[in-house]
Structures are given as C-alpha cells and as structure tokens.
Image (cartoon, rainbow, N blue to C red; front, side, top):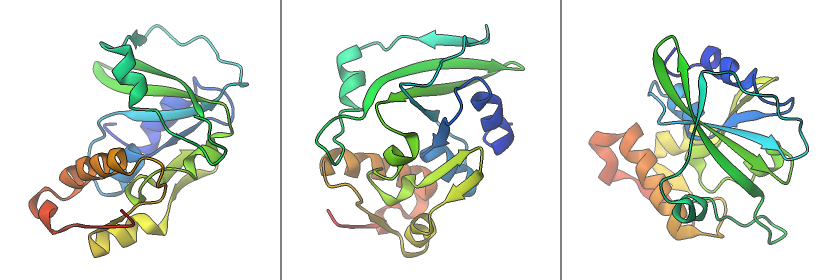
Length: 178
C-alpha cells in the first residue's frame, strides 16, 4: 500500500466528513510513483476526531519556514490555509507522512486554486478525479501556471514534480504562463 486509493481511505477515515486528499500524491499514483507525503485538506468548521495512536505529530524544525511554504493568497486576498500539521502514520511497520491542512474555506474551493497543472488530482468520497490538464502536461511536457499569485514558488514546486515524474527528460519541459 505505498500509494493507492486503499491507503488514502485509511488516512481519510480519521478525518472529518468532507475532507479531501489532493495534489502531488494523487498525480504520483496516476503515473506509478511513490508519494513524498499525503496532503489532506479539511475545513476549519469540521469536527476533528481524536487520531489513533499510530498517528504521531511531527513538529516542524523551523515553524516560520514551514508556514512560509504555505503562504498563499486566495482570490479574495486572504490566505485560506490556517494550519499545517505533519504526522508520521505507522501502518503495519511502514511510515507515511500525512499533512492535515486546515482551511478557512471548503476544500474543493481551495483545490480549484492550486498553482500548477501537475497538482490537479483529488480523492474523496466521490472517488478519484484527475484533471485533463495533468495528462496534457505529461503529453506535451508543458506545465501550466494556474495561480499567478506566487510564480517563483510555483515554478520551484513544478520543477520538483518534473524531476520526480520525468527525471530522464526533465530539461525538455516547458512552462506556460510564467
């Protein structure tokens, strides 16, 4: 269960109703790669259940740098991310890094504002959904900027994803919208 919907269901069963697992882990799964971590988006108004003992909170080494990574801006000018908590989850001796990202908006609204085309995958109660933009990016080797609020950070994130998904041809990729 290195990276699959079965694994994601295991994580989501401890999250509030309406929570979604989205981003890089979903795209990694679609293209047969292991995930670095698993981002779960929850609404601040959701009732948080107590996590089981195999979920260990991992405090960030540098809280300022950690929060700066998530300094984003929604269409209304606010940062929709209120908190990012890292957990190491032990499932049958394998440790998975899960990030619970608490939002001041509906998770699906936040996901619609993701910054580049290689992040557009989501898993939740209605199943697995991956945007056609992900497949188009892989086919054309072009990453599309979707949210121009922080293009430098978006470029770095996109480059890390390209190195993972296509290491042999990483220098062949183009960037659209930057």
